Length: 248
Image (cartoon, rainbow, N blue to C red; front, top):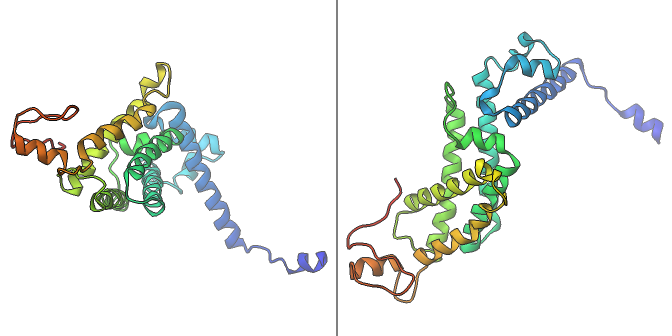
C-alpha cells in the first residue's frame, strides 16, 4: 500500500515549483514588512532591510513589489479585508440588537490589539506619499457598506432609534469606536491598568442606550425636541428646540 501511494504521487512540474516558491516568497516579504511595522512603526518600511531579512537582493525584491508604495498598498488592502471580513461575519452570526452593537465595538478593539500594524496603516493619519489604489478603495467601500447595513438592521429592528439616517448614525458610531480603539492601543496603554480604556466599551453602550433606545413615549430625542428647553426626567439631556447633534 505504501509503495503504491508513493508511486501514485505526482511530482510538481518546474513551473508549479516556481509558482509555489514565488508565492512563499511573496508571503514571506509581507510577513517581514509587518514585523518591521510592528517593531518600528508603519513609516519605517525599508526595502533594503526587507530584502536583507528575507535573504534576497533588493533588485530581486522589486520583481515582487515595484515600489515601497506598492507594498504598502498590498498591506493596506490586507488590513481592510481583515476588518471587513470580521464585520461581515459579525452580521451573519448575531441578531440586530444591543449585543451586536457591543460586539461591534469589542471586536474592533480585539482586532486592533492583535494586528496593530494593519490597524495603524488603515485607520490612523495618512502615510505621507501613500495613495490607496482603486482596488483598495473598493475594499474600503465594501467595509463601510457592511458597517452601515449592520447598524441599519439594528435600527430597522426597533432596537435603537437614533433619529438620524443610518449613514449618519453609523458615522457617529464609527467616530466613537475610533476614539476608544485609538486610546486603547496608543500611548494611554502606558498608564496602568493598560486595559482601562477597553473596559469602557460597556459604558459606551450604556450611554448609547440611554440616548437611542426607544421608550413607550417614543425615542428620547423626539421627546427632547417636543418639549424644547424644559426639564426632562432624570438622566435625559435637554437640548434647545430644533437643535440636533450630528457627526461632523
